[in-house]
Image (cartoon, rainbow, N blue to C red; front, side, top):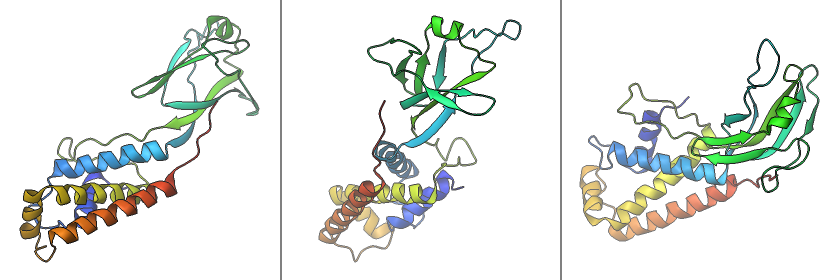
Length: 226
């Protein structure tokens, strides 16, 4: 799987900035990549199904924890799963907090969300026979720096997702060059791009923005809601 360092090298190639030292610093390129992953999460979050690890007293079989942190930021379905055969039925949807049979509450957090079940529901729930599964959308994590820790972390992106992130990074880099004359002059000389005029750079920036806008439209998903 592609590492952040390898993805950064790809971004430098896209920006015609392969000379060492690069015009764009490692920190700047990483920021472009993280911005691309953030935009990818907005347009096309990961659809996941997560089984909640119910905390059960081994002696009594009673569920002792009613609140669970889950890696789901935007849930759209909560199911009860029969462990023996995988059959399922959905729980009632939350409306203004608690509702009737099978009610639950959900709160979004920085790392996903917290789902809370009322005590009366869990007290009557057989965790040895049934499980609870949450369907929803999760955000891809933003990778740590290539400098610390070493070796470079993996991005966790598929080839298609990597292409999308690189399209965003290229747009962000060319946009910066088109608005920063000092950086543009450095890029011209340091990366042997002296044949590119400021006007041409404006056109390259506009073209990369159009490419990003088109790619963002292609990856956008219609989300399900509860």
